[in-house]
Length: 510
Image (cartoon, rainbow, N blue to C red; front, side):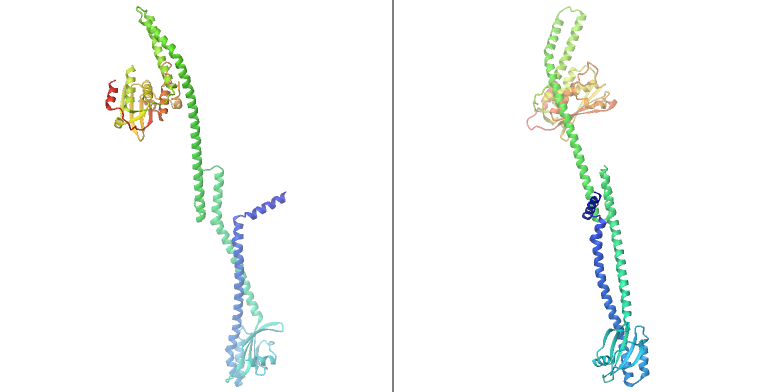
């Protein structure tokens, strides 16, 4: 099994090698192979050139002494011949010098001997009259010989000059060239390999390591990590692409979280709507069942109060019965309002009409001394909306009644138009409300007032009316400075005829 795993790992490594091995296999090895081919060819060319130059050196020496030797040999000046031969041999490149007469007989020698040619061979070369060079074996020594015919003043061949050079000079020199050339190739290959690998590590390896480390951090949960745009242009582009991908993923996560929150909010709203609908149906049923008996009780008490000479205590009790009956009637009316599921009766209405009507209704029943101020923006004078006037007035009355109950001495009603919304706010100078109960403010039967002073239905009825008009109610507590409830309605101005300012005046007078 371990052997199988090793083979599998090796196969995977060959299929997907590391970057360094891939660089070696795809770049360095082909580069070294090409370098070796070109280097070998260059060495061969250099060797050939060097061999030719070494042969040309002997040829130049032979040409230099040919004329003096020819003149001296023609005139029989032996001393001049010997001087020319000694001058040639004094050059280190010359191994031996031989002079043959026209019959191929050696007449003068200088330097190492043993490389002489047979007379017939020398005579043949002299008669041929051509300059030539050749390699030959002189005993155990390889030599290179260069032959130059010697002529008199009439261009008649009178002898032959042979200059020799050891073949080992060629071999040693060429061997040095090969050794130095191969050394340069090997050292150059190693240096270039090191430079390429070091450059790969600095330019590519380290940025890739940083990218890999960044991906590992992201895998561990660091979603806010950003890749540094460093290195070559391709890696900078890769880092920026990864950053864009991470930003896109974060945006997708945020959208998903927001979608989940919206779905949860919708589920809560659906549950709340179902709960409120059930409560509304129950409330409407209870109100209907209680309405008739309550009317009988109130009627009986009213008839008894008409009788003369009633005891004072009985009169007080009957008035108390009527007061509580009226209170119960008010609660029943709110229950019916809350449980009503009839569609809205939308009609064009001037915004000021339901606001002033609600204020007049409350002032007619208000017993406490409160300073109630109405502040309507000028643009509301011509603003008209399609609303269910009765439902809207009920909402405004309940919001105003809630503010009056909470106020110490002052209530302010403000109406403004912001963008495409109508804002009607009710501010009081009471104690405000605790932020912990904000989510319960508009639930039916929830109240912070003492027993007997609130039913917990006013804000619920107002909220239901606002919701049916595609609006909302915003609650804000200012601590000791009171609270503010703002009814927000979308503005959809009707095109048909609206109530005129005379109608508004009629509402004020009523």
